[in-house]
Length: 259
Image (cartoon, rainbow, N blue to C red; front, side, top):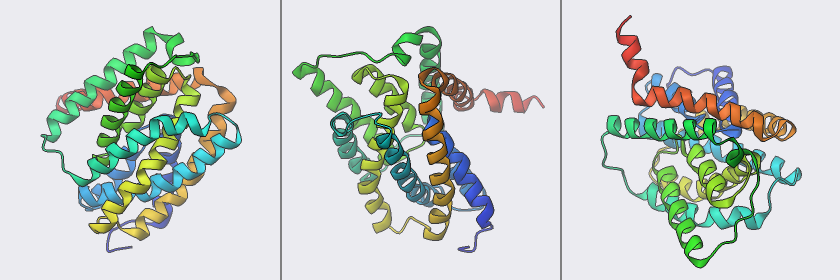
């Protein structure tokens, strides 16, 4: 397949795991991108290729959540429009920042979210009504435009940022925030994909094969989390945030260096 040592079964398996993680919390794309890079695919092309799988995965997940009446189009579009604008800008320009520095910053952000989820349970599991002023709406637009720009650039870990934004700025519980997160990514992924397609940064056979697993994982995960609710999703996110925070901060490398 495109001269890379990748089997169809392994790609579907990687996509399946990635789809579950992306739908339950976020950062599942880390697995897909890392797997593709390990076979020799350049980082930029791996980043572009997995977006096909993510786009199709989110069609399945969003459709499932809508069938279960988890969110409304109005709620989703409120945050999706600024995020999509930011994502298109992010996909057009490169980030001039050292990868190691960026990973460390991301690690500390994830650590803060991890601590917040442990100490402020109610703010993550209960839906709140927020009356928006014009100032609030402007702040929302700026925040989600910035998150969208990051998603357009890299995508990895953007799910946690979107969920946090939906909880803190929208007052949603984790299940609704997660559903809206997937709808937001679906909206901006469609437009940002054109940038990667135009620049020939997608390996179609690999991306579409991954997508089979991603879509299956997304369908199963979206049904599972609605049945179990916000508390289960909170525990899942706590686990992922803890693992990702110590990874990006560099503790894994530090521990590995001693063995």
